[in-house]
Structure formats: C-alpha cells, structure tokens
Image (cartoon, rainbow, N blue to C red; front, side):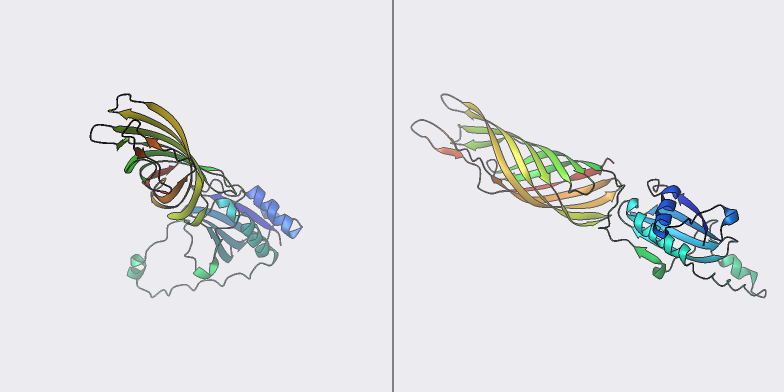
Length: 321
C-alpha cells in the first residue's frame, strides 16, 4: 500500500530523524516506492517525537487516508534519539507493507447519561495522544548504536583527600574535563593542587612539600541510567613536586617529577540537568618513589611516598554539551 508520511519533532527532539531520511530507509527495506502525495495514498503515517524524563519516544500512528485509525506503536530509548532510527524504519515498513485492519469505532455514550458525568470527566487537551498500553511500547536496549550521537563534554570541580603521595592525609582541589566520544569510552583529564604538607625532623626543622598534578584516565561505564551511573577509571598521574627544607643550617630546595598509575571506581548521580554529583574512590601506585632525608650527623629520612596511595573525591560535574 502507498502512504503519506508526516514527522513531528517536539522540543528536545530536534536531532531525531527527519521525514526525508525515514522515507529513504523504509523504501530501501521494502525495495519499492511507498510514500506518495495524498491523492495517491491509502494510508497515513504520523510520527511524533517527544522528549521527557530522560527518555525519547517515537510514537507511530497509522490510519486510513480518510482518518480511520488502524493502530499505534511507541518506541522508547534512554540513549540519543538516533538509536531509534533502525527500529523506527523497520516498524514503519512492516506497518505499511501489511497494515492492520481499521479499528472498530468507539461506542457512543447513551443520550440518557447525565450531563454532570461529562462535566466531571477530565478533558483531553487538543492534540493529546491517547494513553498507550504497555503492550504497544517497545523499549530499545541502551547498547543499540546511535549513529548520529554527538561527542559530549563534561566539566567538573571537586574536593579530594589523599593518603600516601604526601606526608599525612592531604586535601586537594580538582578541576576536570571529561570527553565522551561516540563509540569509545570517556576520556578524563584533570588537574590537582594539593594543600602544602610538612614532614618534620623535629619541632623546628623539616621539609615542606608542594604538589601539582595532571592526570589522564579512561573511564568505561559499568552501569548507566539517565539519573546516574557507575564506572571504572584507569589512568596515570604526572606530578610536579617542589620540596623546600626549613630550620637547617643550609636549607635546600628541589623540584622533582613523579609518575603513578591509578585505578578506581566512580559514581554519578544527576541532581538536575545538566548538573550531577560525582564521587570517586581509588588507589595509586607510584612508579617513582624518591626518598627525602636530612643531612649531617643527625641524618634521618623525612618522607618517602607510600607504595600504595588511597584517594577519594567528591564534587559537581556539569554537561556542557
């Protein structure tokens, strides 16, 4: 049968498939001409895209050209709208190739029914779709590819606590950017500035440590939902360590580079679009463990990084696009 196609994209659904692309996909599957002008068609297909509550719905309404309804179907995804493309084209192709029979007309209410009953009934807004039964809704699995999904970028700021890379338990400020490419794991870049730490030889002498670090990590998701998710992050850290002695006859100052491997788990919970709270807990293994000692007759080791450092972060993250 030949059909007329119309596609409506509501707010937030602008990236969904258009009528021209959908027509080509359906006709390529059926290997024949399907969509024509009203005068030559016997079916009407209306597609309405609606974005709500982290989901994208494509509602298919099929009717005869005179308006007699023949059925509806809804496809829903929590991923990018283009994850609906293939399933939508297949559903439309099946419906127009072997359309269901027209639905029976709804029974007309008896004339004797009190007018007050009508007044008490909630009115359906103009253009609103009737409620869809669960049987007519098809949920697209999240692993289905979304070919037109753009890259995403998230920016974050967090507080951090670390035990091991510096003397004692030290706080730090973290700024981060997370790039989410299509068909690849998220890539996280971050910079850290630690609060200065002291390693004392005695009450009047010791060494003061200042650390700046830059990190790169790959963070594959383990579980994702519109409201949040869990993931694993594996990466590396490059540290710029500035050490200055105090209270000695000759106070020395040195700069060192440090390098460590990192592994940990992250969790993300959406507070409100586009802001989420992110937490991280992990460990670090330094590949460079410089030993810092005092000199002279009373020489002693002041500090050496731990074999395994433990770190935690909590902060906010915003989706820029």
